[in-house]
Length: 318
Image (cartoon, rainbow, N blue to C red; front, side):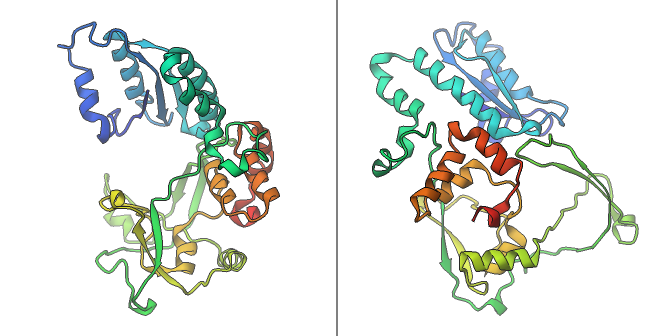
């Protein structure tokens, strides 16, 4: 199974560049992959010129070298929303995989994955047995611990120099589909009254520093019963995560309030993976069932009505 996107000017992601290069070698024998069954899932954004260039190349070369696709290539466009397209592909993938694999060797594992039963704890299977294809709970990769230093001594950006400007927005255009679970905006801003007007050159980049509504943050922290002045830092949850850059958008140590104000998205439409995670913290079985239903296959229409169209945000969900 190849799940891949295109980066830059139709280039492969760094973690598959070597494999991609070797696959394209002209010296490869035409029967190198004879007997190999494969499927390709492409991820991309139609706003880019070389849309799906890498996934299409993967599919073509795998066939050229003797491989056989057991499922037609699926191209998921970020503009049209990833989650719904991924669900549709998943529903076709598992039955196709089950048909392709040897029944004797893989029957038990595939059936478990198709039914989605492994995603619920044993004690919950009886009460939630009518829910189909509930996604697995996201893996915990970070831990939160109290910071030892006082808040006044914290300056997470002390080695960085930023020039901040408040500029008016002249135009805002939504580039993604209105029904998409992603929102990409084209912003036209007026920088005529800043130093950017004379110093900005082609190739330079600017960053937008959003800030959530202060009142909304205060209400959310009160609902969560969090101490807004508590200072924390993020640490890896295991040794395997130590050398990875985890949650780089959150600069810690920082206070809880600063984190909710500047680093977290608390107003966008909650994704199903987030609802799945929230379900683990429910103390009421009815609340847990409601959240699991929203992220299950048979709750797709309910998710569209209550989440995508209503856009409740985090506080609304809570």
